[in-house]
Length: 592
Image (tube, rainbow, N blue to C red; front, side):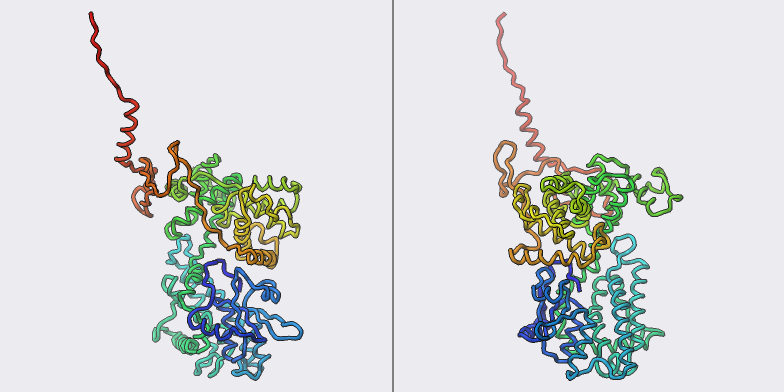
């Protein structure tokens, strides 16, 4: 299973699984490289426990994979099984392949997980494949489903369609179960049971994250399918009672963050918004600077406002509208809405920006502009790595049209699909794009990687490493949604990441750098403003800066920016100003 992109993932097994791991830390010829959270790993783990095969359990940190694993499996994926052989151990990966190996390599270990009868063995393989090719993909489609408007409310017909697709696959599988015994093939557990068991143990995630829950009928409420669902309930109860299932499952609380990421599908919504901005700005012939600025505002907006408050397309449109003003590439809100509409229809159906149908959406974008500016703290500074990238290329003697330079420029556009542009400065982004391009093409630029010029360009190796990992995770998990990803096989990005992981481990470089605040600046000629010295609010401080941000639907959402006057501060300023305009009158007696 590929490593998850969330580095905050709990780093080891917990609860009953922790006790089982501790019992299998001793050296053994057979070694299981695993991740406690991975259901594909749990398949193999269940088989090892059911058959009582001696093994050594090795927990793999997805962000710092051991050299022993990478030697066996350069992709670094789990599960990987190190099998005893002379003179060197031999690797196996892919969970279903490992399951069949364990069954054939350890015939004396009971129970046998595949039947002796040739026909029943073939039939078992059919339904093992059905789990992998039908049930598991529909599980994830159901879990990751978002409502059509991107609001995440999960209340439309599409969610029910995803639910029914998943349930239909469960029913098809349950129909093939033994009619009287608890397990798929009969009284004893077998491989068809083990390949589905990890996902059956995770069905609670639908009740946790999806409106309407899982949707399996209660006992006696299955209608014409009651017999099938009764068989399913019997099987599920038998699986959950199994000692191996209990002991390979960690505390449920540690699964929540990972599956919440799946259910929220936030990465997908982020990428969809960036792709929308890119396609619309191209239709309007807007420069790359406007794209950069718009994406920065879009990211900041989504960090402040939950996705269920606003339609992501409205947020993307408002970000582009705001960026057009900041970069002086002015476009009316109608132009943006119209361009987005025309991209979805045939040329013969294109409309002009003056069409009345765009009126409502255009006004909504104008209303969101205020919130877009508030989310950025009214900070109009923007970062554009492209110009710095070209300077670096010339500085290090790269020809203008070299492969590395061209690829680095395209990577710099993909970089805006991550959060790097709102974390790093332009120099860090430019160095990262140039280094990654060289590594992907096997044309590495030693001067770029040496770090001798980092201080001159106000960056560091740690910041560049963080940005490189952001890019590699983007290409690993969302390759098809990027400009560069499809140009290289998936393995290429994993190969590039391995030495970077090793470098991070060797020099103790953390995955994410700590936030560094702004240094204290002197005030207007009156000395330093120390952090422990309270400052009065400026009389024109926006309401949102004091923490009173309006929520969706409140009055005034589409109005102009509101400011709150601080009477005490205003009076004090008036008094100080009056000192300079004080009229002094002197009386003189004049003799006639």
